[in-house]
Length: 163
Image 1 (cartoon, rainbow, N blue to C red):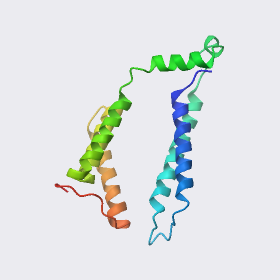
Image 2 (image 1 turned 180 degrees about the vertical axis):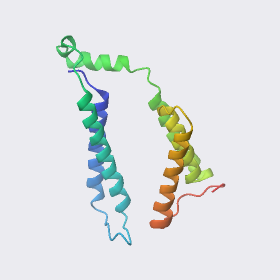
Image 3 (image 1 turned 90 degrees about the vertical axis):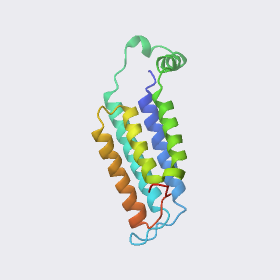
Image 4 (image 1 turned 135 degrees about the horizontal axis):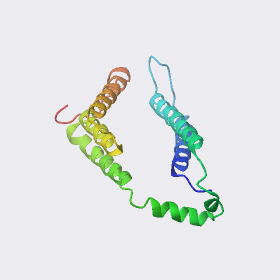
């Protein structure tokens, strides 16, 4: 059976999310009116596991063996074919560089502007064809972060020169 990168990445994300949730157990949740330090990591972990599980189900449902010849090949040959076929992919490297740029920008321009630009650029790298949806998504995520951290949790995010 050929190795499918979508299935493997979904399984890795599920394991990462479960490990994240297990590590989060040592922090108190407190109450919803006065949330403790475990609330946000709990939400992130649950969303990560749910989305990765959904992606795994979608990938398994659309999986079809590529043919009988490849199914008789060894695992080493399948891995070699996988690496040769996908060696030219540049998107993950671009995403890593954009993420590093985002982290470096937070200190100077603040979280909200850096995050706004990060979401737009990463949406375009992933394959968004127009500019409207990435800008709307970015604005929505920025507003969500503002209300979650600044209003509800009463935590201040890094402020920059502009905001």
